[in-house]
Length: 376
Image (cartoon, rainbow, N blue to C red; front, top):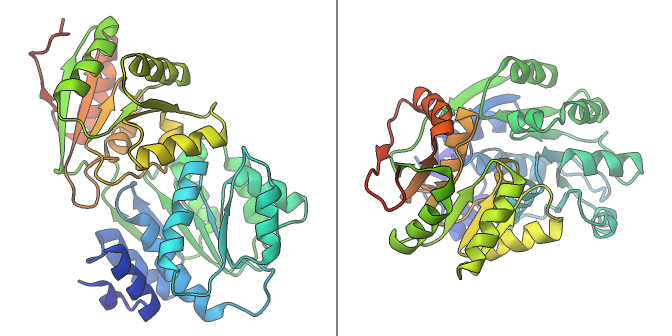
């Protein structure tokens, strides 16, 4: 199947060719035709499946067909849980909309609102936003949502994890009743289903690459190691495992900072990214990682949504996540767009329960690397 088979417009097809897109992913094959019919959609899909294009492409096409002459009304809203993900979505839309006269921008907290307000005053057709800043600018009168025709709630499960449920409901109350709504989540818990039912009207449902699945393109390895030897093992792997770039995960912000400092002291170009970092610091770290001026990015799970780096060779679980589904999200940062990758996990004695949960979820046993200088 090709993108032209999905009935996308010529301007969009030209943009996709320029970006090097050849064949639509499974979620794109399922979602794009359904969205183009005007139906609401519930999509269960994890990151790395091509989800952004699955909703952005049909919305851009529909928006270009209904876009009114008024320059001040926002007609499409995409809500994302983190600044990084919002920026990534907006960057992708820039590429997709290069041949369209669609005005779009992104707003998020943690920075001055001045530049964002100035952009809004110029006129915006499509807005990508995080919940807090969106509500703030709505309350100040800089944004009206009463003309929204297309609404996307992305990463709904992460929205709930981050405590955004009240903000989401306030935003929903500001939207017109008659609109097309798209809802995406990597999991389908009772809370997710309840939220979806309050937003969607007679939706189509699709499910692609459920959160328990991991791609065969990612080779998964396990290292049993005493806690005090983790840092030494990390440095050993960075030296010996042909690491291009590594995304290293910790459970805590303090842990991320400690690992990054230790790596810098040993000569690696490393940065930490987490919720306590300023927006400027987070953007600089992510840009540096994408441009390969940073070798190792150390991240917490909250900050990791939206990290999308081409040809990332290694994801390293310095600390195993305490929620099994998070493991799948973490390692999905490598092995993207048909490329292969490695996922390495460190496990201490007090993390074996986390490891058991991961194995029960994925039904895959990681290959154990028993011989290394920092084993028990």
